Length: 226
Image 1 (spheres, rainbow, N blue to C red):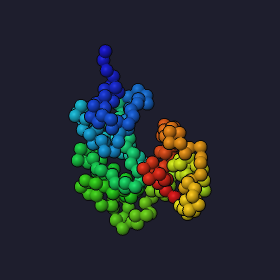
Image 2: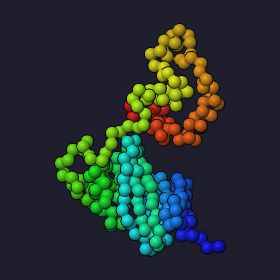
Image 3: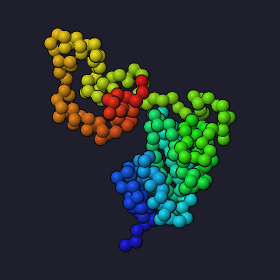
Image 4: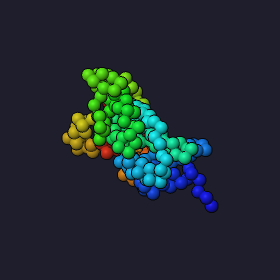
């Protein structure tokens, strides 16, 4: 049975990046979306470019979500449109150029750099000044949003405490010391003080993508913004 063009492209990317493929789906006939981890993006491009000799870059779109930068690379492949989506945290304010592979990306990447204030890596002309003046303030980039997530300020301490400890009221280090001085545990007993229950609770939060939606950092156990 013949493999469709859409399935062949997805298989090609999967072979090129393996577990670094996050998701891939066909939105409609001859319209494919592929999301890969940033560190594997060039490997994905190498794989696709090697398979399809007539691969052509259409354009690059950039979206600032507040916490992350999303880069959408649109390619024309034998009458179909293939879009790669790469998401990078705003803390990593860099964009690796693909102009060595696709020269048409040169000016598009410079425009993104100017408008969003991202730093270009491995670009032949990484300095600002294509759309804006070279002395344009870095903190006044036209399309760059404030670094924050969806939670309003008053909800952030509660959400941070709930996700990290299962407790809706954060317990300060001062109160913890006072409890220890009184011969009590640092924290009073809560529903999720049991380790197994806590792992299950955190597993549910990960499954529904709550950390990604709210901007919670599991490693640091706090929100990425204040």
